[in-house]
Length: 418
Image (cartoon, rainbow, N blue to C red; front, top):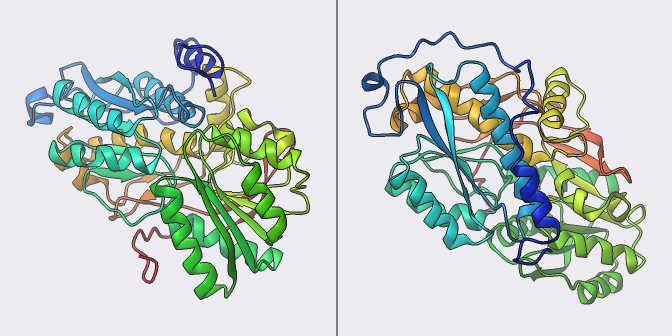
């Protein structure tokens, strides 16, 4: 990955994020709100940054460091959603002002910046975090100061907070569903797990191992972890070649993916013959990996840029108009886009920016214009969503090969997996 002096890929990402609103789409994706600006004293009783014309929200993601390759899309999506909401007239008649902070791929920094956004800036809501480590670091801050976080990443589950709306998938919607698919479609019995060394991959693989051994009656041939930013995978690739698992189950994150998939290919592992199932690679990561280096691998997500539906076609067109034709859109990027809209709907349902009132109004809110097709907030603060599996193409896009017939109810605390 790029060095710390602003050269290389990260500086290119930074330049993309400094683009103005020249690409703002002329046509918003939702009907214009009909809310007149109610008196501020009536809609803000807890000292949030709300005026008669403006409300402040925070964006907190890694714009630098090894996670920037993944989190840049989230920043772009949140800014697009906010720009569209403002074009529609804002929230309760108020335009959204954004204060953006950089978590810099460092978990203590996320906690520090979260406190700044809540205590100093009095943000009414924050769209942010990516890794579970960053979320776990910031969570006590949101709970202590009663802030509201919209968290966009697929994650391990085993968490539920009054102060978080989880717009990505939890384990039953992604990990268990993907393992069931690969066992059925590929007859898979043996798995080799490789992940980054922090809470999400380790907990995800713990859940996966239980499902493989206890439900699928399969075996785990190996399990290896590497630090974030790690770039030398030849040793573990040799172990994979010796073990010959039916499936490589990968949850490597961030910039390490670039090295991992390039080294897999260089080692002669043909992903059209060796099944690889990842729960961490989206179009955003492939943009750095290169389509030729990962073609043939399978990814389980709820969203892919190639989805064919009118909502997604409008979203993709608007995203590319704002951020450039060469940009790609991954699962977490789309989930990040949902956050500002779900917050807007909850605020307007509550008739207030007060966090407790917004939280109380959030259950059962539906977003029918979501690019993935449709979402609904469960009382447990997760989203009902579909599971999809897709094959990576040399173009850098995915071909969807499986879609769950119905929305899957979120269950962050599955019995037998804790």
